[in-house]
Structures are given as structure tokens and as C-alpha cells.
Image (cartoon, rainbow, N blue to C red; front, side):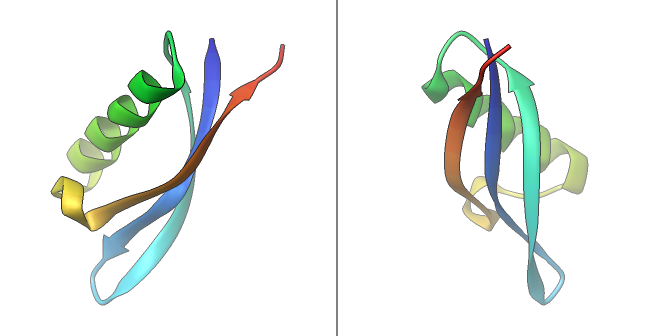
Length: 59
């Protein structure tokens, strides 16, 4: 299943919005995967990433 996960992350002094499409078995795993991807791409800890929501994308 594909999910669209939206949220914000800390970029310098401000918070940047993001929307990421991930493939996962369920909503919980999609959120965990997003924490991992955003953290590794931007060198951030989990506390600097805020997830606002995740929705399943219908094919």
C-alpha cells in the first residue's frame, strides 16, 4: 500500500513542511519509515520531525 505522510521538520531556525509518499504494509510502519527517511536525508533526530498525518493513497 502507498501512503502520503505530511508533517514538518526543523531546518535551521524554522520548520519546513513536507509531504512524502512511502510504500508500507500499514499506517504505523509508514510513519516510522518517514521518520527514518527524513532523519537520514537531513541528518535530524526524531524529535526534530513532526508527523501531522498519514493517508492511504487509493490506486
